[in-house]
Image (spheres, rainbow, N blue to C red):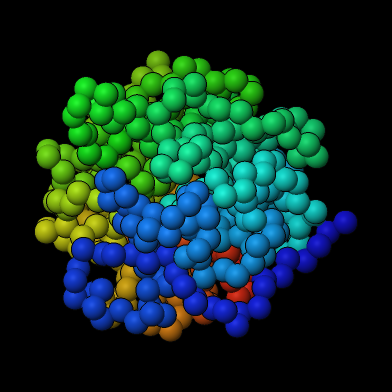
Length: 439
């Protein structure tokens, strides 16, 4: 039976929020309480900002600051939802709510969903952090993999888990660890490579832990990865793709024209400059060198919880979007590479300068490239988009595609059967899958 998805009431919109202490003191001073609902929290070394100060298990701390006053495991109570298309055209969603990780299937492009299946119940240790969300993929044979992280202690150490289904999502295996390394692992990203393998990357603290055992402090984290040849049933030994990265920004992940994984992440350059770089994997499955996307020169001993996104078009061009507050530039930007990530175009500023711009995303479908981002004017959050039909050479005029009041998830873009969509979870409207139309 299919059930319409409804959002909870909006009387408690943005009572309290995941507060971001952005490095700009002027911005912080000007922000209203309502505006702060649309900011996001830095995680400084040795502490996790307002959430950490709330005390207790990480999930409890995040819940104390959340604008959502909804405690069950339903989609209506989710702060974030991740879509994936199945070969039969059905849409799957994965989300965290009420301490549980769940999935549900829609056969009518997100209008209604079947009863959800709970994959794991983790209570106060479920990770609902600003840049964390469960990942879901559906293989060509219909097998489903869900990858996510959960906290394992009250010191914000986490581990990445995977659960799989071989019966079309009716049941899932018990969640199990992707890596046996005891160091903290968060913010997984997944993609299916050309050989059918499931590739998983995450933010990893093993090098930080090793440095601490030697009496040294190492800022940030690393980017680790593992592969599965059975759609998440088992994984290869995990390895480090790049040794120095930001500790709590999501990873952009795509496959190139050869269906090999390419990573985009906030790397650490020099002492503590946190700019973005790409690492492409070769045919033998090993990571190549890091190439810097832009010299933003954001020197900060903190993590902005504001990760990038990456898409690769049919012609092999890379399309990157990111947020920075560097000394060279500040805001949300897009750049393109036509030489396998070795060099990138000059950054193109996204959004209106009169509004707070955040959470960019990018989608490549054939020769079309879509950009989307969130804007906030002090009252409403809006998602704006623009499209290029020639892999980034020329762009349409940006336009608003959706709006909401109160809490909203980061905008995501997804495509199926030649059509592109905005995927957006909001407190007021619930889950929406909105077709993107060229104008």
